[in-house]
Length: 432
Image (cartoon, rainbow, N blue to C red; front, side):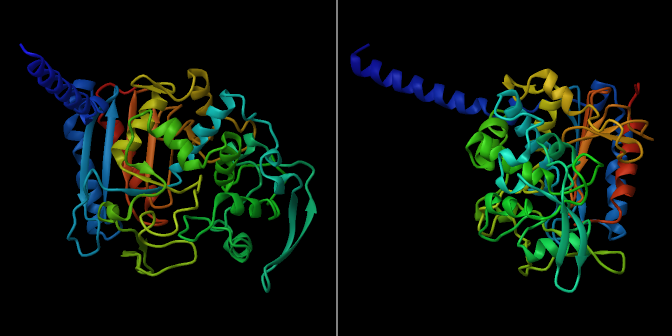
């Protein structure tokens, strides 16, 4: 063989090798599949999920849902029921992008715990170490609805990183108290949900530190902008923007491609339409008009500068599954290690001590945890989002359940969630 033949042979081998390497990055490697029967579940029972969701669609309570169930590390059930748009021209697909809202919180909580492991954050560090406006905090005493002014008293303590992770800092959500904190936040340009405006977490979380706390830090559990503040702590401690940090340390190592804060405008066609409840008990597609902190095509349009650690991520069910599987596998997946096993387990252990949370649930670092729950076994953990998304991880049965819908603050979430739980656990051939 002459040298030119050898040269072209080498080029050919390189080309084939490159194609092979590219081919390795396929869903077959990232995702393993099995039938329900192969992992000890009943197929006929899981099929009931499709009819259950369709009943809600027919009742005009949801446009539909994408559901994913995995057991023993393998996807055993996926369904796409309903339509993305109100005209019912676009059926739901597995690759549709859903606004995950507060399902962002567990991911950002993992980011914070990575920095705890790295020694860049300590759980009992004052938040003021990272955001100067939190060096001195006050407690709300009175509020004047006429001009959104208030009076306050100095707090005895200031919030800590641990309290951000457990929602015990006293930091409120505006939508949970619209006449008080909602008015204060609006007056000071602080968003509860995602924003299309050209603002950053740095300037916004600094403003949060100037708003009086609802109670003395550590006194009780209250849902609030804690994880948004935590996201800013992650930025300061890591020296990176939150989206860059999460890509580098969480999503890319897991092979996740469609789970992020913002996407290119060209992906608007993959973005599900968002709905909201009507006064008559049905739903309507959120109109295509700009609101104060939200636009219908978030996250493919807008300034794309604000990274909400508490609610800003969007993604597919399959990509969120990879994050869940890494947590179920004690912080590692496919050779990538997000957390050491002891840290991953710590995140889904009760961190509230004697503080009360919700019936049948405890709270860890970014996750709720089943405790004497009517359907889930003790230790199952997860969370949901304002657009009616839900997931849970069940270490007892080696199970992951994700259901993505897209109705903002649906009053029917408890109903559909409980029906989903009943179907899933009735499908276990040998429940534990």
